[in-house]
Every structure is written in structure tokens, then in C-alpha cells.
Length: 398
Image (cartoon, rainbow, N blue to C red; front, side, top):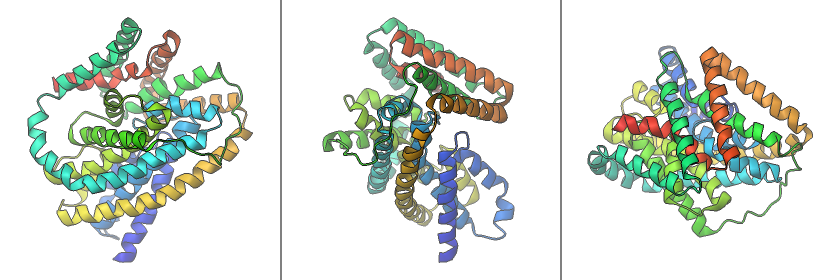
């Protein structure tokens, strides 16, 4: 049994590396495949081992997914807001530093989430019934605060409503599978790459040995903010990691780029770990991986303890792998012509979108890219474009 579990963790870690580094291949897709092939898989292994594989893969994914976001500008929903600061690091020669900062966030999230896990179980059990009817109004307050603090309030409202209308249309398209992939790839990925073509033609040499100036107070602020927003996404239906990041940014200000990257690294990891608390207390799944766990085996305290141990082991391996792979990217990305790289990534993402979502997805990609460029042109905060998720979620709760 021990060797079987060890093998499940190993395969999960390797699969998480693949999903984390490959834009468009998400853990939800692999989890769905695991459910589909579960009858065949369970003939050669146990339900516990299959669940351990899914959890191990999911945790490693949250560590590795910062690398394509920073070096390639290809985000998923958890890293979308980190594209622009991450790209700034890259163009200054500090791409590896950005990866290390997200790594601090992910590892810190694992430690804090496991330490606070019993507390979150109590909060979910007693607090969820009290706040579930007021979430929509809380989000409206967040949106109003976002717009009022922007210097160009009219344009901030315009971008929010424009992106929000797009989100309403896209998320209600029954024929469009995986709608967030073309939506975020355009809004934060391709738009950022197009903007960068006008400001940079060469990726500078990436500095491998660098001292990270990160104040302990800023780090703690970022990590606890990540715990709060990750908790919201784990507990409340309809809230995703990107929405949680927006909420965190309104609550915890003046983090700077370093603190922001730590925050971005922590949110996805917190969201996944605390989803286990939601599963245990409410018997509700908030993401694809947890849905798979729920369908494969019954939830118990013993299972949760095993999965938390799996998370610790997988996270330890993920730290080493993220550093190694990040260094490889930093060393070799400068050997590539920047403009050709950007065009290649745009073509690659476009092909992926077409393969996964068809012509409808391409239309969403083009539209979201156009909207994603607007904030850079009119000089408003790009978080306003998160209206593509916030507006549908607000309407869902209200």
C-alpha cells in the first residue's frame, strides 16, 4: 500500500508539472478524465491512490503555473492578474525573481493553510450560513471601492461594465466549453503581449543570483490576504481565484510588486487546500479536482488527514521542481528573438483556443483581447477588466 501511494504521488507530481507548464491543459480537464476512466483505473489501484494522484497533481500545478504566466504571458484564471507585474519583472531581467516570489506565496500558503485548517473547519461550519445571503452586496461594495479609487472613474466604470457584459455573454454560452480559457487568454495574456511589442524588442539577460528585497510585514500581509481570499473562493460558489485576487487587492493595499507576486502565488494554493475543508464540512465541491475526489470516495476525517500529508509531500517536491524549471526558462528564454517568441505564443494560444473551444472561442479571444488593451490605452487599472467575472458573480448571488 505504501509503494502504491508513493507511486500515486510521483505520477501526480509529474502530471502537475505538465499541466502547470502547458497553457490550456488544466487540472480540471485531467480530473474529469480521471472520473471518466475511474472504473478501469480502480481495477488496478485503490480509490485512495487515485484521489492522492488528483490532489498531488493539483497542488503541484498551483506552484508551476506561474512560470508560463511570467515567461510566456499565458495565464489561467488563478494567475491572470499576475501577468502584467510578472511581465515587468521579465523585461527587467528579473523573471526568475518573480517565480521565486510566487513560490514563497505558494509554500507559505501550504504552511498557513494546514496550520489554520482546524480553524477554517470551525468557521465554515458556523459562519457560512450567516454570510451566504449577503455575498452579492459585499461584492458590490468591492466594485464601487475599486472604481472610486481609480483616478479616471468614468473610464474605470466603462471598462468594468464592458468586460462585465462580455463575461455575462461568455459564461452563459451553452456551446462554449472551458469559457475562462479564451476569456483570460485574451483579456490578460495576448493583450499584454501585444502591448509589450510596442515597448520591448529584446528580452534582457535574466539574473539568476539575486537578492529578493521582501519585508517580513509585507510577506505576512500578502500571505494572510491570500488566506482570506482563498477561503472565500473555497467556501462560496461562483467565486474564482481571480475574483479573490481582486478582493484581496482592495483589502490589502501598498503591497508593491513583490508583495503582489507573493499574493498571486498563494491564492490558487489556498483555494485548493481550503476546498478540502468545504468538502469535509459542507460536502460541497468548489473546483474540478475536489468534484473528482467527491465522486471517487467518501469523505472522512481520516481521508482529509491523508490528503493533507499528501499536500505537504507534493509541495516539498514542487518547490525544488519550480526552482529548477524556472532557472531553465531564465537561462534559455534570452536566446530567443523576443518578437518572434511573442508572435509564436500568440499563435500557439490561438491554436489551443480553437482546438478546445472552436470558432466561438476564437471570437471570445479576439473580443477579450480588444477589451484587455483598453486599460493600457486610457490608463486605468487593469483590475477593472475583472468585471468579466465580478459582474456575473454579483448577479448570481443577487
